[in-house]
Image (cartoon, rainbow, N blue to C red; front, side):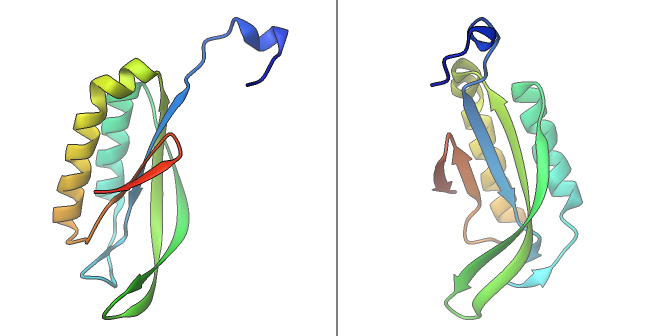
Amino acid sequence: MIKNAKLKNLFKLSSKVTVYVPSTVNINETIDNSKHVDKIASLLSDCFGGSTSSLALGYWNSPSQGLVKEKTTIVFAYCTESALQANIDKVITACEELKNELTQDAIALEINGEMYFI
């Protein structure tokens, strides 16, 4: 915890929700994931007041394809604990839909530094 007189009375968002949006289907077929990124960014913005995205390069081991490398878009939002509790079901449902639409084994959802595979 930071102890600083200037920060003491400022509004703080102590929770963070992050969805990792893949850019592949069927293990390693590259797709344009922009509409999926927009959908997640819009949801997080609606639930938490705003969102941010950044590009990353993700790796994972596929039992049938070996090491798979893909461009991933990380979409995240900071929020209050109460907003997190009120909206987490919507985020999980969106991750389940994303998993099905992109035929993924799982979608990574990070909440306050803990990773869940939906």
